[in-house]
Image: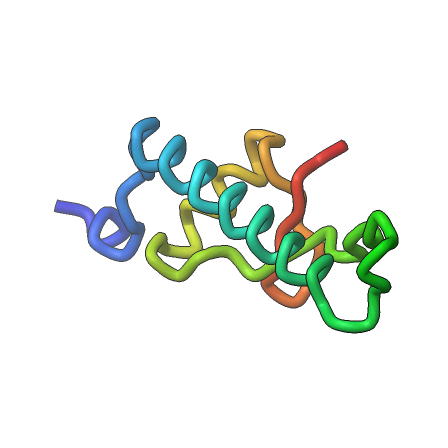
Length: 87
């Protein structure tokens, strides 16, 4: 047995990647909705768009999952452990 095999975490499964991306999108949507519903917008206005584009991914999944999604181009790293959806 090689010692390098023990130090590397297993590759995330396609099912795990899909579930993680779905969780990320849901968290981003809820974060944006929360930002849009802040007090200070008039009751008769149509609201204001959210300025949030990147979030810290859900911690239910290991960092390797988020890095793999970024490598595949499904997410984009924004720095400081934050990710965003690519345009």
